[in-house]
Image 1: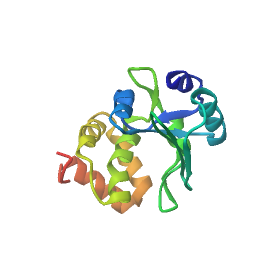
Image 2: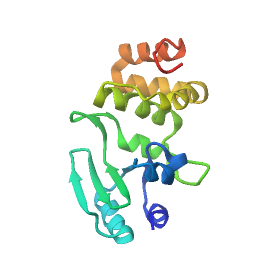
Image 3: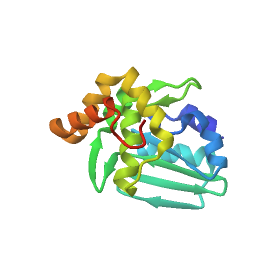
Image 4: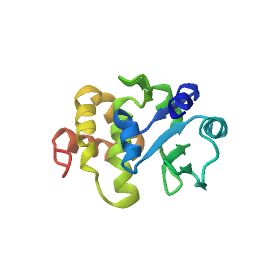
Length: 172
């Protein structure tokens, strides 16, 4: 049912952990989907997966809890109400994974993986270091531009130089 839902859902990306989507659910993780139309995404979700046990609504997302797992329909990439990476930019430049699911371009994925945990929880998830390193090597110009758009010219370039120089704890 989840696979059918993802096939029918238009204009979305799997934000993180797409390569092990179902394994992540089995381990108690969730699925984060950035969607262009939250209302349509919710209708399709309930149509394919049935009514959830609970729904949590936030300014940036809606969380749907089922007895088998949890799906977040994310509307914006933000922190405390400030959008730091435009949904439209992510959706417009998405790519297909090896499994045929839409995912952010590697530069956007790296920025999201790198910044979300420190902003929300004050820590870095080391499991995202390979994605960040890959983005530096394979999509470096776009990652630099993304960091500038997120943090401004001065801080965006400082973050980029720190990545290139491998001076960030946990990235190398």
